[in-house]
Length: 574
Image: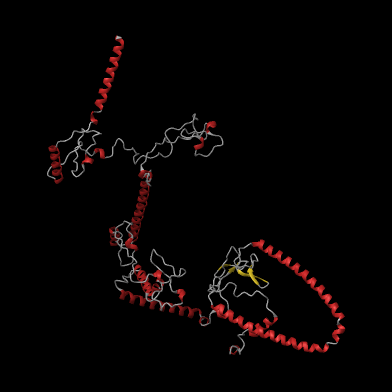
């Protein structure tokens, strides 16, 4: 009984110890005590004074001032975290111990191989192909050997560096300069420095040679020495003469227009008209070129019209002359002194023409042949030119310019529905069709050689049917001839009636010709009315003749056909 009592007392003591330890850890979890009304009022007054700046700001546990305008629920530490702590903002800042650790900006994979240690024998576990220990045979980047290093034990490759495991953040993964070696740029800088030094030494050597030969004076050499030798500042040299361009100050001129003006792209809404570049706001061609209006009748004829009309060309020629004169030592400028430049340009043109004329006269006096200059052009004399043209065996032009083919306003060489030939390239029995497949339906798809074979088979079968029909007709004619021989005696008595039948046939022919002439007049009027219509509004196959014409219709066509060489053609319609 005593032992049992001791065991129970011992277990009760242990339970009490555990309870005490748990209560000690949970002391900090007690809710804060409630403040009295007086303490609350003093606290509020202190906060108001701190906001007004009359009282010093509250300091946190790290010695930093807390902004008095920060609310209490942000600055105060929650009671369930640690109620004994003073107000602080540490719990609002990122916790360094919980922040992920990323690789530094200078850390990167090592390139190349280890050059300190080179193995001479194959090591177990290495690559069977090259012998390196840092990869296996399937990851080896060397050329596959006929006999691997595992069996030969020769030419063991060096081991690669053991690469570190990089942990990059969002910006580090997307850094385009990540892993860049600054020493690479230093090599480029050193190379350019060597080139610059070589240029300077060459320039100094050239000046010394000129001084030694006496071609250059001392004063000129001093001017060369005093100039800025930095060749990076080249903007002043390439600029227009008389105008200085500061490379540090960029001036952009925007191509603006008055808002009340009509936009260039609204002048002609046809998509096939002049092209409008929206980036530069330029329309170089004339937007009214397809409307039949002259350049003088429209208010805007394109940018090229302004560029190549009026005094623009002469202005450009004068500017070119100013640049050339400035390069030759004449101090002239188009904007600074236009009168002097114009007079100089005129005198230059007169002297140039005089020099050409004098040179021409000198050549004619020396060699003669002035009578050949007055002859008409060679093209008119011999009806030929010296334009070189080279053709292939198929007639295509290989070298030279082929004569331009006159094109109509209608669409030409338009291939539809996979056809290789145009509509109308094939004609058969009064029908138009496609030559590639012998199809007579305009909107049909091309069947190629199979279509040609099918059409030829159909024509052959049709021809056999026609031959059979002709044979049957011949048999019937023979029977009729037999019957005619029997009735010859009867027809002898009716010979006097033949003259009357001939006169009746002539009257019938005249009536048929009259109707054919009237039909021809109607057909010509119909064709004229159809040709006046737009081809898009014209009915389908409106000008297509299906049936073969009769003799009367052919005679009416010959009678009604106008001939341009007929002197009475103008009186036919009256």
